[in-house]
Image (cartoon, rainbow, N blue to C red; front, side, top):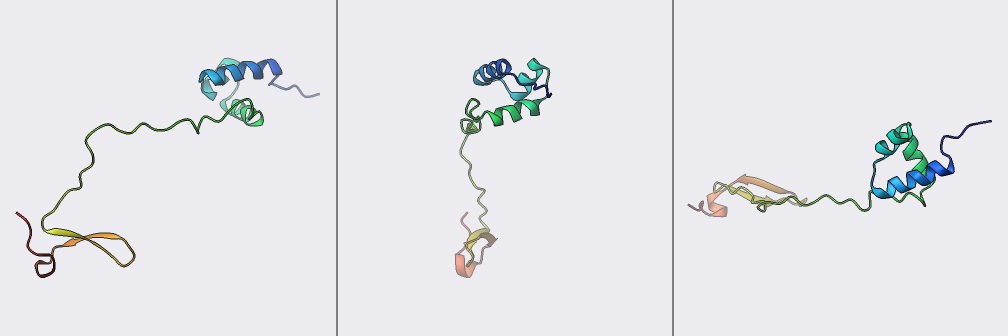
Length: 99
């Protein structure tokens, strides 16, 4: 006879804690088990433990917008393959550098 760690009562309690936002490690510490046992149990009961990765989005960093560094003696060209390459300015092609 095998003894199962996850009884229905424990699953219901873990489901409540999961919906409150506790991590798998925090739930495991409350039950005296390991993080992976909680993750595996949540995977087996996916209908009761919805994925959290769909709801998490990193916040955009606040600050001034990124401004590329402008070098008056260099120019950006696009190659045949579509890559953007910075090259030295050729005065007879690109004109003279702006002051």
